[in-house]
Structure formats: C-alpha cells, structure tokens
Length: 312
Length: 324
Image 1 (cartoon, rainbow over the protein chains, first blue to last red):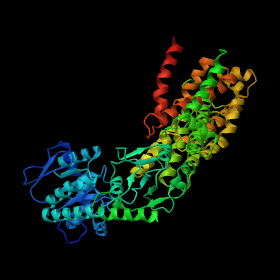
Image 2: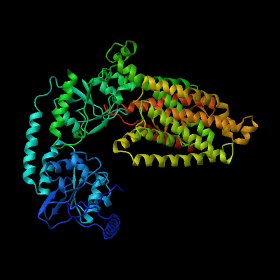
Image 3: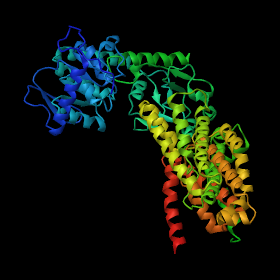
Image 4: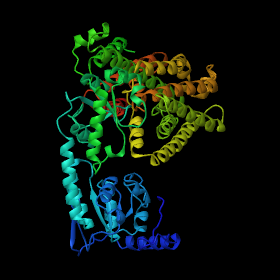
C-alpha cells in the first residue's frame, strides 16, 4: 500500500498519531462495512454536487477534509485558497510547492482504499475512469462521498471550478478565479503565429504515436497559434505511420521531454522526416502541459514563445 | 510436389513485395514509386527508399525466418502445434524488452539488444532444465521446460509492468504486440547480421530434421547423431527467432501456420519444404504488414492482429482439409 503519514484529527496540532491501533481499527471497519454490502451515496444534506459520471452526492456542509486524487483538482483547490483542507494527494501532484506537505496517498488511478480511509476525508475527488468508478462505489459503501471528474480538456474547466467552489464553500473565490482565467485565456489566445506553423506532437517514437485534437496538449498548441499536424484525428492519442508524417511534412516537431535530444533524433527511420533531420524541435516541458489548471494561460504563453524562438 | 508450386510461390512473393512498396499511408502513384526507386531526388523517394523498401525486406526476412524456425521446432519436438516461441523465447524477450523500457536504458538499440539477450537467456534456461533429465533433449521434457520458463518469464514481466508508470506500461504492450514501424536499413542490417548464420544452419540441417521426424531410434540407426542434431537445431532456431523478436516484437501465427501449409503444398521433405516455408512466410508477413499500415491510415494496426485475423481462418481451413 502507498506510504501513509497519518495526521491527527484536529488541524494545526501537527502531532503524528500512533499508526498501529488506528490501522487495525480501519481494517476492522473496512471488513465490517464491506461485509454489509454496498449502500447508496451519503444523502440528506444541503449541498448537492453532480460529477462527470452523472451521479449526485449530498454534503451536509462544505467539505473540510478533501482527498484530491487528481493533480488538476489539487492545483485548483490551492488556487481557491482551500489548500489547508487537503488531507491527501497523489504522487503526481507537484504544484504548488505547498503540496509536498499534504500526505501522499499513492496513485490516482486504482488508488489504495486503505490509504484513503486512513486520512478520514469527507470528500474524495477521483479521475473518471472505469476502474475508479468501482472505487467510488466502494467509498460510498463506506460512507465517504466521492466525485468522479474527467479533467482532460479546457472545456471542463468552468464546470469543475464551479463544482469545487461549491464543494468548499468558496463560490466567490471560484467565480472570480473563473473570470480571471477566462480573461487570461482570451489575452494569450490572440492571432495565430505568422503562417500558423504545422507542428507534429511526438508522444512516443517506436511505435510512432501522436496526440490528436482530443488531447489537452493539442488544445494548448492551437491556442498558442500553431496547428497540430494530426488535428484530423479525433482521439487523444493514436499510433500512426512515419510515412504519414513525412507526407504531411511538419514545420516543427513538439518535444515534451526534458532530455536535450529527443529519442526520435537518434532513430534511423525518423531521419526521413525533414524536420527531424534539420532538428527543428520546439521544446517545452513541465506538468502544466499535462493538465488544465490555473497555470494554463502561462503554459500557452510559454508554448507560443517556444515556437517563436525556433522560428528565429 | 506439384510442378507449379515454385512459380506460384515466387510469383506471390514478388507481387507482395511490389504491393508493399506501392502502398502506405502516403498516397503515391505507381510512377512516383518507380521514380523514387531510381532517382533519389524525387519527392516520394525518401518514403520509398528509406521507409517502405527496408520495411518490406525486413518483414519478408522475419516472416521467412519465423516460418523456418517453426518448421524446425515442429520437427524437433515432433509436435505439429509447435511455434517458434514455444521454448520460452517470447517470455524471455519480453522480460528483456520490458526491463529496458522500465529502466530507460539509453540508446536506440537498447530494447532490441535487451530482447535478444532475454530470449537467449530463456533458451539457456530451457536447455539446462531439459538436460537435467538427459542430454538427448527428450522432446516432451523440452516442451515442459519451455512452458515452465515461459510461465516464469511471464510472471516477471507482469511484475515489472505492474511497478511501471502508465506510459511505460502502454509502451511495453505496444512493443510486445509487434510491428515493423521501426524498420530501417540499420535494423535490417542488424537482423541480417544476427540471423544469417542460424538460418543457413537450419537450412543445412534439412536431412537431420527429416530423420528426427521418424523418432530417435530410427534416426540413430540411419546415422544421425541425435543429441548433437537436437542441440544444433535448438540453438539455431532460438537465435533466429530471437533476432526476429528483437527487431519486430512478437508476431504470432506465421511460424505455426506456414509450415503446415507448405507441407500440404510441397511435401514434408525439409530440403524442399524449408526454402518454400521461407518464401511463403515472408510473403505472408509482407501482406500482413502492408494491410496493417493501409486499412486505417494514417494510423497503424499492430501486425500481430492482422496475422491472427488472417491466419486463423486459413488455419481452420487447413485443419479441416487435413482431417477429411
């Protein structure tokens, strides 16, 4: 199970509780409740929240102890000023710096139920995938509210921000943040870069994989003024032929790894692509390119600058 | 052997090669393909010369090698259901490749070399296990040892995969599914360097394979050194298959089906059947690879999917015909 640092119940005392008896108690509780079978989500509350899976939960009052198992929502919660109510995060949550003080509950997909229960959250945020749907059902059976959210694209931004604002009782902060992000997005997404360069996104070199227009990175690319070479592909990612890349002849190649020279530069069969041969790489890296969040306007700006830097 | 077999096989092979050169994600007319082959300056030349040509040749080489290995192993184990990956080769190669990807070993050839070494490691293990019972490498013991080593390798692969990130997991599975998208003149050269000697060794063991088919005692009474022959065939078939896995992942059905088809077409004498299997296996895989990169272009299907979809009905027909 993922490493668990158990905090004491009352916030601010900073005392590390004794692990062993609490774990035994948690396990016994889990066993008893699971043996009783699943129960419907917690209801009879004032605050009704609907998630991306279509189910609605009710909270008696705004959440005070949130286990955010999605890196995107972790960023949003800190941006809303609700960082202190976080009692759990994933290994992939890396922004802002204060997040390192929040207990790491392990992976966000198929997370450890024991680790989640041990931090006693009153709301759990899970990424909407089939595996996590089962986890959400199990959590409901244990009396813990869970929301399934698909944080893939910019279109979900408004909806999720509103939801989080209501869940934490910070609707005013959520509204102003939403307006601010909208304004910033409008500012950075102005005219396309001269000539609207066509850029090939390398997701993997062997087999060759790219990201279609359904992916977040493709969206950033579009707003930064360039065009995804494979914008005709709907899916988020796809395995394609190198021949197709050669045929479409991209102006630049987008590389998201931090390495100085991407893997495709060294592979012999990729040398057929002129952009690879001439090392026309646009390099960006950082977790702000993986998820929609408060850093997205800055990410678009960085992308635009990176493209313009290569053109010079 | 029917007299039209040789022209038929060579004709089909040439047609497949031409089709492979003329087809792909990029829409090139036959004239531009021809111009691309003769003149490096034309627009389609890069695609035809550096992507399609080595890919067709590599697919042909790997397909032929898998068919020959499959035929040799079927004679070695005296079991018509044997395929080249029987003796833990696919498991061993998988462990090597998955480890190289999870630990991110540097270099373009890290994964192929790791896969090759992993496959060889598995075969050495199988040999040592089988030799414990007797140095004559009893086919049944070989089979069991192969199953054991394959299961062990599979478990290790699962362990590595379960501890790796989602992206490494996806990449490992994609590699294991097999494909020729990484084909280049360099990988073709690598495959030729690793596979030429074992292939020749297998082709030269044709008479020995005929004798093995009869059984150990008849073979020995006819002058075959069964122990040495088995060892040679095992080593050669394993090296050849390992070379194929290293450059193109695990491609199923070729090594299983093609020998059977060839036995029906040209007879069971290995001196004729093995070369026929090479040509037929190569043709089959070229066709499968061309299909995999044209049916859903610009996307590509893993070639193992196509060989299964095409191969299973063929195998079923062959089976029915042989049982009638």
